[in-house]
Image (cartoon, rainbow, N blue to C red; front, side):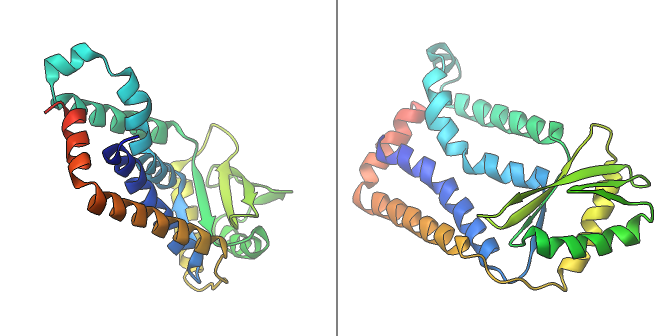
Length: 216
């Protein structure tokens, strides 16, 4: 892999790892919707997709016809495909930097204020008035919990109410930093260092790689 393609792969990933490291090192829980979480991951791996399957499967005829504009079309196509995946995904809320034991009392308090007929069944929760059914998925290593929709018939307005209620309560909750965040932050720093080295040591190779990819 040449210097330009290496920078293209590492750049978005480094930003993503730095963001995740900052979130996990925070002293407060961080709530994000599944759509935003998936969109951020899609942007992070965009460089890998470009230098991987997209460039390998790119037809030469398209390059001759559209020249450098073919990459603009591919970026638009990737954005549309990512948007479609996000829209088709089931509703989900992910809480970073919080264990399931810490989340349960906060979630119970939020649910009691939203739906008096809320029912628990193990790690599953049903909110009939909000038309929300979900179950808890935990990641002990990353120390996060996801509230994942259990059925196809879900109310996005109900999920939005649950999100706002939890977000309001998380502002009053403190949690210890997750040590995994330090690993993620250090990984991001190493990636940025590699990017900086490539930019300083091989500027001409990066420019040449960019021209070759864009067919300039």
